[in-house]
Every structure is written in structure tokens, then in C-alpha cells.
Image (tube, rainbow, N blue to C red; front, side, top):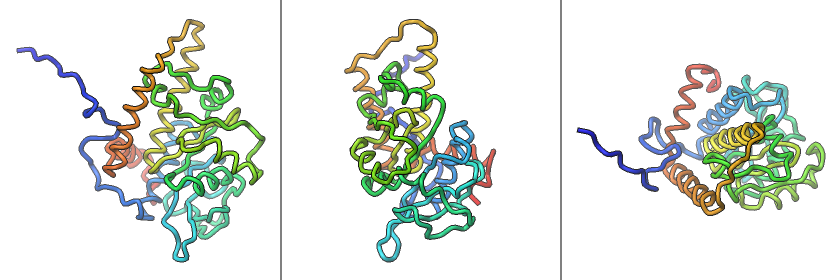
Length: 275
């Protein structure tokens, strides 16, 4: 006998929800943070979202014994698919080296943006910056990302903008980046790329993937020359709120089957990330 499918309610919508396949993550466990951050680098590389040895993904570590602020960053000169949990570099809020297992140092200038955000936004456990073709293209448009579909609707009213000032070498720019970002988690760096803040490495990566495909979908839709359909503001805002609740639920639970699935993919394709 045929049965009628039951509609999904707001309570059943999930982004990374469901039954966990790994134990809840300990946000104070440096070993786990290292593995997650190395995984982020490898996943960004697998998605073709890296830019040679440039751009960064940083993660906040628990404070040092004297209360010093500590962050993890990739060794300068390594491709993203060469980053491992053990070769990540520990730096302070200025980008100065605390521990450098690989011995290549870091691109201190590249940490300008990350240090600014980490120091101002203590909820940002991870800051992810990319220069993808799609992200740079959308950041170069006055309109930015449009609410054309479900993917992009999650970012409705939640994207900050920072005007281009040249390559981010000027430490004075940090205050302007922080002011422009405010309390949002996604920023389009005009004519430059994208910036994502996550309460965990997993959240930052998922937001980055969703933003990237939203940018690609917009470019694909507009390239047809046909008339795009903009979602009504109320529908887009409702969808964004649904996504936000789902992300909140996942972060509160501390378990994330979607992230676990990504790690299993890496275990199959690039297991050295955890070394």
C-alpha cells in the first residue's frame, strides 16, 4: 500500500545533524584542532579552491601558559595538499613564530587579515580566506552575491563588504577589516576574494563550500543571458534563518556527520593530512 510522504518540518532540517559517527569534538584539544585544520587545507585543495602557496586558513588554539594568544597557520611555501597536522606553525597575534616544526616560517603579511579577525572576534575559532575564480568574480561585482537560489539564500543579509586597498600588507587596514566585518561571518573582500569565520574549522569549511557553489551558480545563471529570478526578500530571509538555526544546532551538539564524512573522504584519498 502506498504511503504519503510526510513534509519535513523545521525541526528535521539539518546541516551536519543526525547520528554522529565520531565522538563530540573537544574545542580545547590542540591535537584535534591540528587534525581538523590540516583537513581543511586538504579539502580546499581537493575542491580546487586553493591559490598556489597563497591564502590561509587559521585556527585559534587555547591560550598559552602566560595567557598568550596562539593560532595555527600553514608553513610558507607549502601547497595546501602538503599541509599536515604536525607541520602547522604556531604563531601569536602578530604572526610571530612560537613553534615551527617544518622550519619554513609563515607568510607574516598573509596573517594580517587573520590576526585582525581573531583578535576582534573571539567567537571565530577558524578564519578561512580564499582567492577562487568564482569568489573573486562575485567580489568584483557591485551587487555581490544575489539571492537566486537555496544555496545563496542562506547568505541573505549576512555578507559584509570590505573595499580593496591593495595587497594586505598595511597593518592599519586591520581595523577597517574588523569594522566592516562587524558581527557577520562572511565577507566579500572587494576585487580580492572571500573571508569566512567559523565557530569551528568544520563550520568555516562548510560555509566556504556553500559560498563557493553559490558564486558559481550565480555566474552560471547570469551567463545564459536569460532573466534571473531573485527570491523575494521575505523568502530569502526565512531560508537564511533556517540555515542559521541548523548551523547553531550542529555547533551546540559538537558532532557533525557531514564533517565526519569529509574526513572519511580524506582518509581514503589523502590520509597523510592527519600525520
